[in-house]
Length: 291
Image (cartoon, rainbow, N blue to C red):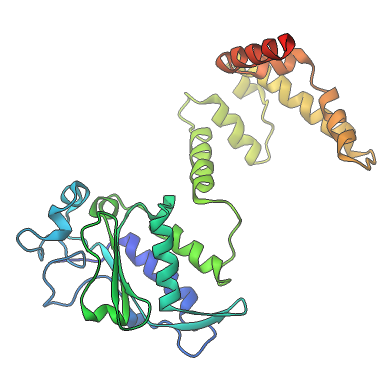
């Protein structure tokens, strides 16, 4: 039978953690955040494969939905709330407006969202549809907001919380740094690539040992990979330069920069540049010298 997937349960928990018992006249109650439709519900994203109907729009209109159809529901309903944070009052309407704005702007953490059905005034029901097929919904959406997710994203177990973390951060109910979703994704990819420890990524071994506070140039790591000797020497030189600077009192940043650069010779800098980039650097330097 239709079930609530782990990634939408995690999203539900996130919203309730920060909007239930929040300051204000009307916090968000657990009964107001739903994933699976009631037993009579048939068709749509609140239903899994056992409850979809013939030509169900939540299956046939997108290859992402056709490929992702399982017993999992793929929607979340959020009920009314009115909370105060950051000197302002925040409601279901302002939440919906913010989420739709992010979707319309195609923010990176919205791309698994198929549609949002909502009302800004409790009277007129509106619909943002990524596929551009519909603009409204039934009257029940006057008092709750419906968010549908493409079924392949739910099937893959992708985390659907980042967008809503940003919302909670924007209203002051969750502390977040200032990185954009793209920067978060980039950092996660870098971290994943650097920490592969299957023997084919020696740089990852060094990175991980540095993160653990261990000596990144330990013999047992470097000796098996001759190319790491140069990198190890560079790291050692930089560490030595920083150590020499630590006991000195600089009053301006240029002095600090010059001190660090003094420990990095042109040969060491050149050795650290990948071949493809080295050619680009050489071409750019040649262009500047001619100019």
